[in-house]
Length: 394
Image (tube, rainbow, N blue to C red; front, side, top):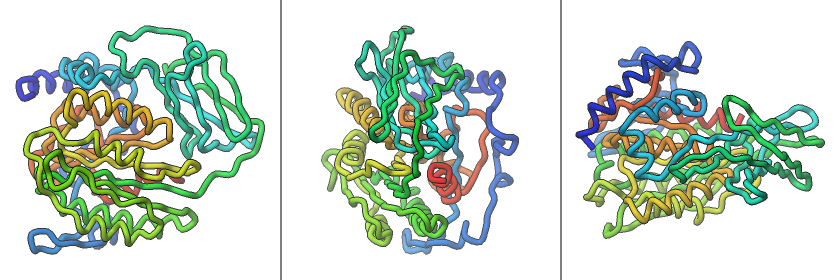
């Protein structure tokens, strides 16, 4: 992919100059540490050991980019040749977006309202509303030749169903639904970590384990009125010691902390890894709650999945995640390329997630790809994850 890097960079710079960021004024791209904000817990939290040295949390730096909030920027990426090549390689075409907002009789957001986007009465995409009562659905997500076509939708909650004979695509129209009843928001939250544990992750994994342990330890304290379950899948590749290693959801965070602490990087070899197997284990082999306030799956990787026929599996698993209301939130580490970036951002878009990328500001790990995004804020990863989790459960 290196031969396309210069061309991709040129188009990225062109887009940056033409596209105005939709973030608030504090969402500025930072080339140093001036954008980092710390508190007593940002660097004094959990610790671990790597290569015999004690590692403190609050060292890994990262940024976030939400393509939903920067929709015009995402659409303009179609001018980028490398982007177009990647979308066709992965058969992901997230362009026909349908946004829904569901409220109850008291004008409060409805969580877990099941939305079906339909063509001629047959569902083409399904999802659930999140803690804000929002759901994002897609038409022709895996079809290269896009065409406009009339669609309808159905919103179902408990024993109430509302049919929408016509719906509008996001431009930036939102399809609003009001249910004639009062609702009570759920209190259970499922948080899952899917982690690449192949040898190429060795430069960062020990640090990332400490950051994840710090996030898990702090989140319960910050949200005492919610019930958390934590689960994880670590994965490698075919021919390694294991393909996937799973820890089932558990309300006892110490169980997952112990599981994470016992994992280490090894194996792999070629660039692609068994991402599709890990997604399958994460989505289908874990007992995700059906009435959660939030279902969050953080996908931490530094390499793409294998190509055909695994690409088809990735598409199917992503669609299944959306139907279950599971948000896929990628965290890309050092070593990824632009096609992997575009794929992971597509996973986030398809499931109403967001894109997180580790930066090189901390000096930890190998070279980090400069993402094809606009202005962003550099943060400590542990604080960023707690912020993103908070935005999905408050």
